[in-house]
Length: 324
Image (cartoon, rainbow, N blue to C red; front, side, top):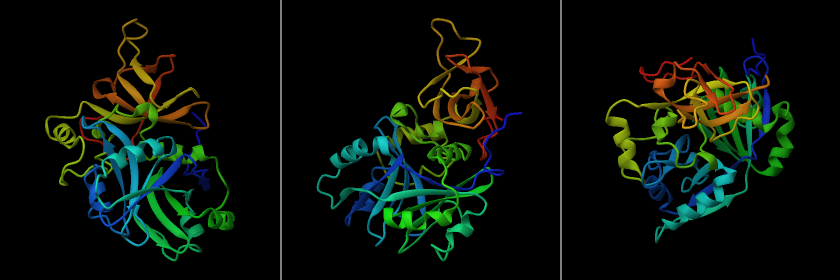
C-alpha cells in the first residue's frame, strides 16, 4: 500500500500559485470578443460565476486551458492560465481584436490556493460569504474568492488579491504548502491544464473538457468550433483522459505512453500522452493521461519502463470508459 499524500487525511493550508498568471480583458466589447474566441459561453457569465474555457486552433486543438470570471465593475473578464503561456497567448489574442473596443492587460495580482476541510472557516474573516459550490465566486475589498472543484472530498478555493493583502492575511490561512501540492490536487480533481508541451495535442473531449463544463455546444462560432462539435456528435469518443499513478518522479507533461506488448519494438506507436503529472509523496507521480480507450485494459508504460496504474476518476465518465 502506497503512503500517498491524501487531502482527506493530511492536506490543509495554502499555496502561492506562481505558476499561474492573469490577463484582464477590459472595454465595452470584451465579453462579446471573448465569446467569439473561447469554447465556453462568456456572454452569459455573471459576477457570481467562474467557468473553465478553452482556446483552440482552427483545427479544434487546444492551445490553452483557462479559468475565467468577471472583473470587478462587471465590464471586464479575467483569464487565468499557466504563466509559461501567458505572454504568447496574450499576443495571439491581441491579433484578433481588430477594431473591437477591447484592451488586454497582464494583471499582476497574487493568486493563493487554499485547501483543506477547514478552509471555509479560515476564509470567513476575509469574506462574509464563502462561495457555496464549485465555480461560484464572491468578491469584496479583499479581492475575489473562487471555489474550485473538490479534490478527494475536500473544498478548494482560489483567492485573487494584492500582494500586500496576501502578506497581511496569509498567517490565518494555515500552513504554507509547496505550490506542487495545489497542482497535485488539480490532478486528483481531474482538472487538466494545457502546457507548452501539450499545445495543439488535444481536441477538448480528449481531456474531458466538455464533461467539466468547459465547452458550450449551443453558443456561436469560435476557432475550431466545427471540429469540436463534430467530435461531440459523430460517434463515440475513442480517446479520453484518465487518472493514473506511475512509480517514477521523472514524469512530465507531454511524455508518451506505450502498450507494454508493443514496446520496446523499434516502431512502437504511443497509445497516449501525459497531460499533467505531479509528485504524490510516495516516490512517484499522480498523472492525468489522455489515452485510446481500447488500451484501458492493457498494460501501459512510459518509454523508460515504468507502468501506469489506473485510478478511479473523481467524476463520472461516459459509459464506454472503464477505468479505475
